[in-house]
Image 1 (cartoon, rainbow, N blue to C red):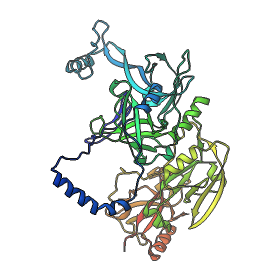
Image 2 (spheres, one colour):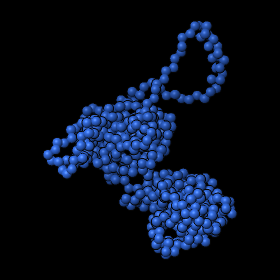
Image 3 (spheres, rainbow, N blue to C red):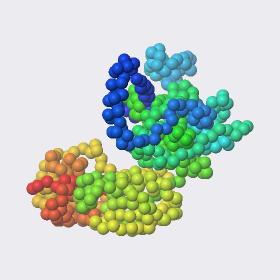
Length: 523
């Protein structure tokens, strides 16, 4: 099965697997006359003292992975699915499209012909896909990717010994792309154990086993290339990058360490062609294990909820708030009656730690909160006005259909070209006006909104470059709310006099608030 996102020249393909190979190397000694060999030995002796003081690194015996493969391979399975998809409309009297290969030119021609037929009824056809998985319990629990089994009407699991079983779906989690299946066998099944992905280091050897392109039980080897990769595929992205060759059909299969423990689940590749080029991504076991445990218990995943909208603390945001480092998560807003608001956390606070875990960026906070049980207490440390404060928050359960809120700037906002001047905000290139009833009606603003309405933006000004647009309402500057044009002018003037490089504006755009750091230019 393949789920791919194509990008010209390069792209990310979420597939039943992913990654490439590496050539082997051989070191040999060339034959030479005895005199030359003796001269070489003499030269080597001269360098011996240097060699002896060089750092010594332990080198494991990696002559073969065969013994390890024998142990783990029986628990890796092939997963095949059947989906019903809508076909083209055809007349009852017309023949159906022959079952031709996907890449057949004749198939393309016939599909175009049938699609152009008018009337008739829409026919359904079965689509088959392949993926990988692995058994985690002798009772028959099988882990795979959600995208391997999504919309499947029939799921089958095939073991390396030839046994084939009909699988039922225990539960799935789209946000982490994980799913748990159950098969019934007459005997205990071989199974794998979880390893600690946090202890896996960049450069460590790993093995991957799966079914690339339907080639069952394929074993590949490589190393861990990196940790913490964000593919923008979900709010909890924390992929481990590997270079063990994986391709379409590997998705859902395991990544092993040399102890035979599962430390990752192969889920995606980065590729210009859809095939392996040496960059594969696996879900870390420490993230997957908790999700799978919950799916096994309840069939769903209940996540903790703080109820805040957060933004990245960029260097400009840090500068405008007087922070030493661009770290943490900026609270851009919060929902009504949120756990954070009830505890005393405010808009404009920068969350720096959660339950004594340092928050470096947005993903650190979203993952930490999601992993916290509903009803439990969490200590949240923030910076407010340059001072550190701590709050005890009772974590709530995430509401249904609640998205992890990230109030990031809109990259594709249309840039206004109105040119105007206004004393006090020339540094930003803005023209402001009070939030009158007329402007609220003109720009579709809420009656309760207070602040300064942007009625003009100089096209080459810093504010325009940051996406501030006509119709936006400035409702805060720095970590303080404002209610008038005079408030904005005064605070921008104060920031300029204190020689800040940027000022942080809290923008209300059609009811959604977000912070925008705007560089201060000389007037």
